[in-house]
Image (tube, rainbow, N blue to C red; front, side, top):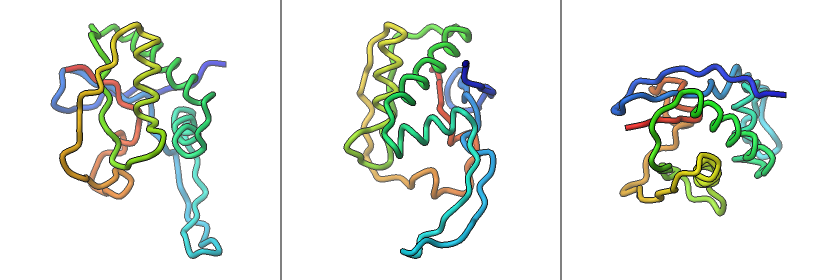
Length: 144
């Protein structure tokens, strides 16, 4: 069954960029766990759920689906693509979901992966920034 997306154009310092969908539909605080950590009942979009499964549960099936839906969108959009350039995560992880997605997308679209962007400082994680548009949490596909 095809994954539901709701592409939205995002403004920025690039020629044209899109998100495939919002990440979260709603998130309600339900209390604290036994360690004092807050817990939420979160409803995600289909794309948001796939990203969650990839990032936090390390599910490779989610990666395959995300690459497929992203490649299909890019093919339908039709921008000239010469390479995939992943933006480094704000957090160091043993397995970087952004790099996995970029690698899969480069293979699917038959373009080179150029892992050339490096962080020069440690920015805040987007989930801890409260003045950004909610589209920032979505998967971005941009051209410059």
